[in-house]
Amino acid sequence: MRMDGLVLCEPIELYNILNQVTKLSRLTETNYLCLLDVRSKREYDESHVITARRVKKKANEYLTPESVDLECVKYCVVYDHKTSSLELLLKHRDDDNDEYSDNTGEGLVLGAAIECGRALAHLTHRPIHILKGGYESFSATYHFFRTQKIIWMPQELDAFQPYPVEIVPGQIYLGDFRQACDPKIQKDLKIKAHVNVSMETGPFFVGDSDRLLHIQIEDTLEANISPFLRHLCHFIEVVGLRQEVQKQHAAKSSLSGSAVKVGEDCSWRLCHRCLRSTLLISVVQL
Image (tube, rainbow, N blue to C red; front, side, top):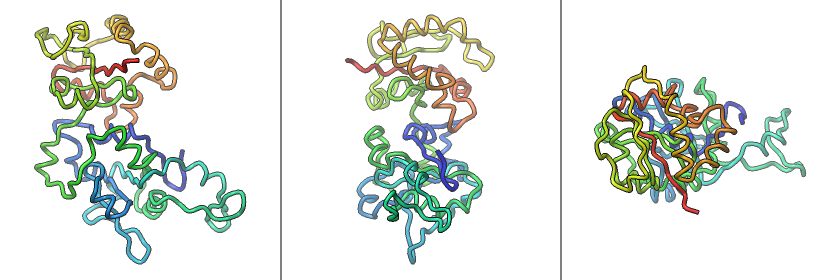
């Protein structure tokens, strides 16, 4: 969904943008992500998404954060409290005066994120992403990415430990060995099962052995995982995720679609560069 250089960004997309990594988190790259918070100062000071900068207004105009060149930034994501759709504004646009109105002819008030996005759109050749559901939706799902920290030093970004990329919302994540063994990540994402893709067969994870599937394969870009997919699907069925995965697969071109859509060109390849790739599975107990 687009409007005047704006595109709606799902919470999972922002989550995956925040968690892309090469040797270090991509958040260390100056021109990778510009995350803008257009809520009030009180709300921002109370809590905001990690690395987000508060947008200020002067003479009723939004000011571009200092030291940010939007023309060079790969992702510019703007959020307010809970803007959730651009559709209503698209349906009732008056092209003659560049305003938006409802069926009664009265003007609709643009959400702060949309208003800010429109003001910044001319500064970049890439679309401005408006976070769907705003801070309210994102923080409810990814509460562990809330912070009161305002200034991030380069060494702090270097030390930032990304979470696994999210494949099936709230269900399947793709990460590395460190993430699979991190108790905080397992608690935050409610991880209940693991698929370990590695030649090493030692006891890696804390938990029930029937919640661990080991796929013994070289951790290289040339490795072919296809022969193991049937076994992997059976394991997913056993831990209770088969119907959810089928639903997500039908809605997307591939299982990893939601993770590949943003950040790296291929998150599967990305995780191969981290030794001992691991598929982390969060099981919702019904």
